[in-house]
Image 1 (cartoon, rainbow, N blue to C red):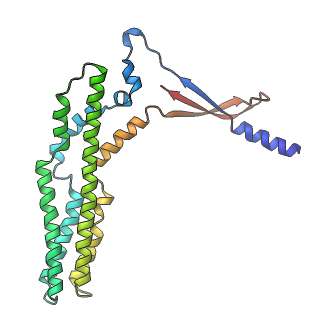
Image 2: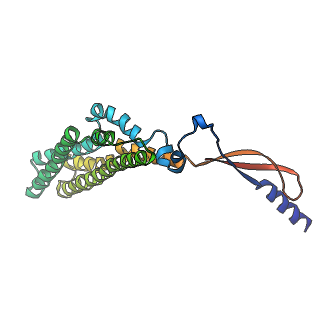
Image 3: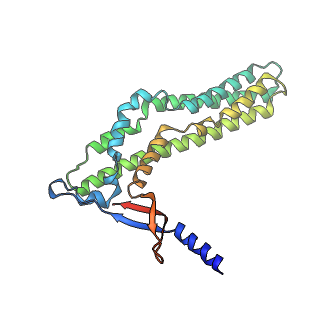
Length: 249
């Protein structure tokens, strides 16, 4: 029984946790608007509208690299299709499969090129948000929420492009492999196309990364800060290792 009590006491000492709330108080002259502490959209740094400004400024320089993972996959599919079309030993079904592969790959190359030239989600969103009023806290909140929606819309478009690309290119590669002659160059190329079809999932769009980073910034606003320290055990007053959770509001 004494041994059990000692073990229980040690466990209690090691698990002692003190939670304290730390509230920052500013002077009247430097006080931030109350809305900044009520809404994470206004407290986060950078704000969504500021992130739009930063990304829009670099969007034109990145337009030809934005879709590179999908274009790599599409190029591999196109080459595999052309090789299968040129294989003299292939039959009619194999030739048709090669035509499908070349068409799918070329189609994605054309689509991503058009998107690179005509789809600039950050620049268009920046123009929309820049024209919105931002005098009152309510207007600022509306502005930031619209900016967040535009960041998320770009990420959603990226996810759809990713999965559609994987489905089309992997399907075309599988169709070519099923109709290619065994041990032929076209069979190897179809296998390479099947593997490269998943490259867009390994290298996600920057649009997805930006939206994810902005969400993480908001989550960290009210996150607790853990610090190891020595605290008195409640029942005996003996010192024991403890953990202090400091919540910053």
